[in-house]
Length: 380
Image (cartoon, rainbow, N blue to C red; front, side, top):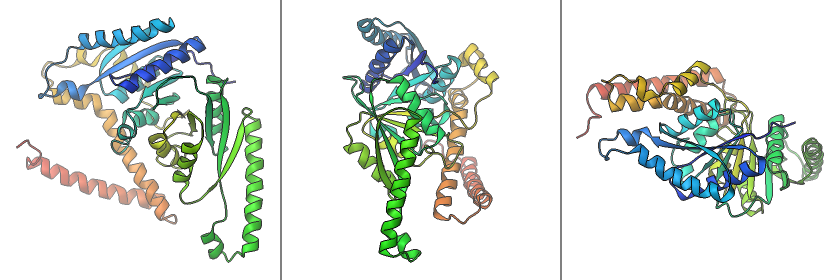
């Protein structure tokens, strides 16, 4: 029995797609009888910049409140609004945890926004950091979802993601897509498999995959089933299927970003989160390194600006608010490279790879430190 969606948090900026995310959140909240929370984060780096005029947070809050009120009034939905300063990913993650949110909704400006840098977008950072299901809005919310395309690797985590999606949108048609391993030409050549044997093995693998997917679906919900073969271009093949399919919501499940072999971390699903033209529901029930409970409470109860010492500079303020984000980015970079080397050199030992990567990172940090000491990063 899946947990009921009682609390929804929608994170918005002042973009058009954020408004579509808000529309979608309002409809879901009304249908589920859920409490709606709306959050807008004023990025701290923008506030601290000496090249921009001072920002009136009260005026921004009035503008956001006006936009939200207009949309919620039309659907007669009550809401609670939060306007805060800081890092968007960190602030939204913190708010989601403290409010015990069941579903997080966020809009994206499109492929350019979500692929802006190395795991740099707010959307991808939120998926990495939170165990809350994240609904990513990429399209106008003109109508209710009509068809869900659920990618599965037949794991319990994939099952949880589909059950959640089916509970959330129980009147929507469901289609399962399972990519399975087959015998390709290179494998047949390597192991000297004849054409007849190759054809026989392919049929057996197709039958096994079909039976496995049917068994998986029986434990979840009734729906259409589709199979594609797993080869070197699995990411591109899956994306091509998503593009040509008539679904308007893609569902992805994962064990969590701490597992290098997980469905989401860095590989197939993160590729689809970036490139899928449809809205995406990313379900990650666990996180790698939750922040201490006391830290969350302290930051929520005592706003950072109230405990900041008078002599703290804008730069120190900004870095303090982004410390966890910077640390997570470094760890993500490390794990990504560990994974890529594992793919390229499958016989290599993880410990050897990790130690070699650390030497490279230390060498680069020492080089940067030397440049800092020499004043090479000062503005000209």
